[in-house]
Length: 513
Image (tube, rainbow, N blue to C red; front, side, top):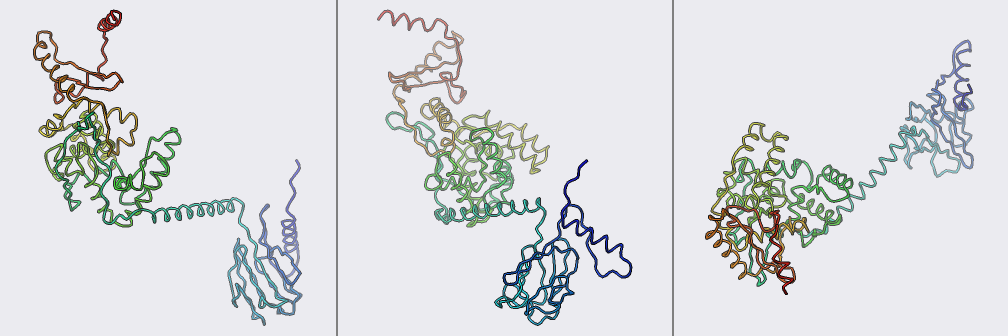
């Protein structure tokens, strides 16, 4: 079997070592026994136009003009024994031996200095013509070099990112005092401009202390939205990276990775600075705004502002207003189940609030409770009791809201809006113009109720639906059931029934024309 070529330096080292062992009498030098494939450090000596590299085959070497030195430097500025070099591994140390012209490093006179790869030392003042310049060369193994290069590149990229973030943060509008929130309800207008959604809500109530929100709401919000809220600077790097990986794998935007601070920034500066498009630029500005909020306010202040300003559907801003609306009690008195139900509506308050869809809200409530148990915020027994508890809603407020004009039609508009532009729908603050004719809507509602009251019992029918469509496809009236407060199921758009022979009359009518 043929063997590879052996490094000449290694051959020389092994030969010198063998000679030292075989010689009789006292040894005058100690040579290193290098492992095959290992390179010793090299000392490069430059004096005028003369340059020579010396492999360091001994752990201690003398430098000077004396022919007996290990490294002879023939220069009038160099003393007989000018300096001594010791090394181990990839580190060295150079010591002056009371020379006449001393040693210099970076222009300063020195008596002793450590040496690392690439370090330069001048024997005699460096501005002199015959001064000798030493360069210590001890490069690390290639895996370590690759690791160092990767670290430098990573540091450079991080430096550029930090500089870019700092520049973007400087462009964020002032956040003290806090701007007025830009998220809000979705206003749905009839053809004549009348709003057909929930009516005006009482003035907003803001709480001045975080403790006023009770024991459960802050925990539920952090469990659902931002578990590391108190540990990051407004942006969660791991959460952002996880969202990027998820979105790249799926090929679409499935996960936002927004922290509580980012959500507050979007709420306050969504249209004036952050933007509403589903783009990387919008996410970048949202992160910058969140960092500026973190630099301006304490964590408790940010959480309190979030709890006071987040939109919860049906015109309710903040958890105090949401608790009063949906449960008829202040935030501090909410049970664990009620607090989790309100937090469960956060991803899409116009669609997930307990008045709009109680079943879906309960599903999201249970997700919040499970997350709180996983994070140790509540015990497993507390979480199970909360999941089993019955959610008692504020029925009076619910009746008042659902007694608004065309509740089935309003719900249908929200469903279609979420299907078309989910991100915009979740943020709210939109105005939707429709072709609903209020006179026809009122007539259709009365017709269905009167028909069911007059003929429903005899025909064993308790529900019905009416839809009136204009010649351009616009919905002029829509009634999805007898009483929205009793059933939110829209029989005009959600029921799947076989029409049978019902449509024959339309075919016959068209033929008769």
